[in-house]
Amino acid sequence: MRRYGKHTDEDDIRSRPNRKGTRPRTNIRPAHEDAAEGMVLTVDRGRLTCLVDDRTILAMKARELGRKAAVVGDRVALVGDLSGKKDTLARIVRIEERSSVLRRTADDDDPFERVVVANADQLAIVTALADPEPRPRLIDRCLVAAFDGGLTPLLVMTKSDLAPPEKLLELYGHLEIPYVVTSREELETGDAAQRVQEHLDGKITAFVGHSGVGKTTLVNALVPRDRRRTTGHVNAVTGRGRHTTTSALALPLAGEDGWVVDTPGVRSFGLAHIDPSRVIHAFPDLEPGTVDCPRACSHDEPDCALDQWVAEGHADPARLYSLRRLLATRERKEGD
Image 1: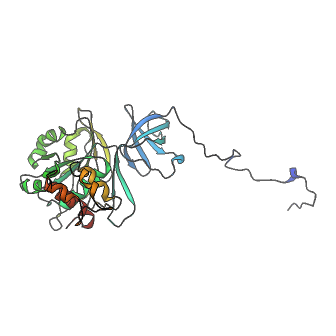
Image 2: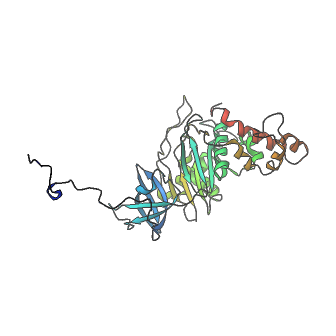
Image 3: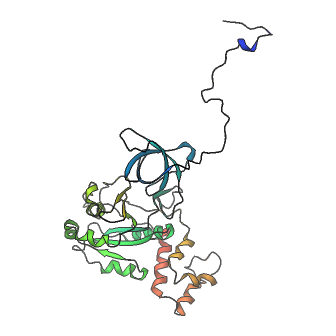
């Protein structure tokens, strides 16, 4: 082993090269002004499929974005190989501001929110009228998430040949939510898709519903060239279906200027991330009446000014009942 004395020449000392280079670190990030614009179609294990012009591009998130994640529906800026050829990979360097966000948590005690889809115009809540039985509490939770996230809700009721829709419609009629009623036969013939499509043209619509309600069957009818595996059977004991859609996927609407986002079947829809005070924004006929409410009013207490507002004839009492039912949703489990 070589020994050095007290007066060693620095040139004699070997040093390991810095693998990270000698360039000083900086907080300045490149602007990527020439980056191409794209839309995220699906996300799978860190790889994002994006649409750039008329090409499908596989991309990954750039390190400079940190923990900020891109989701289906996001408008993004991409650099790198944008040819879309096999074994090529682009980089997402910017996520544009979102116009709407549909979020959920695993349950009401889970602080971690999950963004389901970004920039959607409306949320189609698909529920069967029977087999499996409708779950109004889950529908309520989806409505709260839609109102909070800036999406317009659409109620799609399937399997009307097994049960009539009137009972369920009574719960939501005063919310003035557009709806479509379909049967199993109409799903098979395509008539259901045709009537649903009238509400989808020119919009980005996210479809949500628990398993076995016919959601993916309906999506397949709307986008026949991009068929997804249809839903599994409904368990005769639990009355619940088996998940067959495992990741959200944006699909172009057949022959129209619109998009359908098929999401995995849900068994719960947590609202831990939602501030109840924002739900009132979905009730423009009631919102002015909250001016005289006490501070931090829950809108379901003796001093709530909405009771007087409704008594004076400014709004339908059924609308106030609907608001309070939705606000109470966070306090109940979906199966109640």
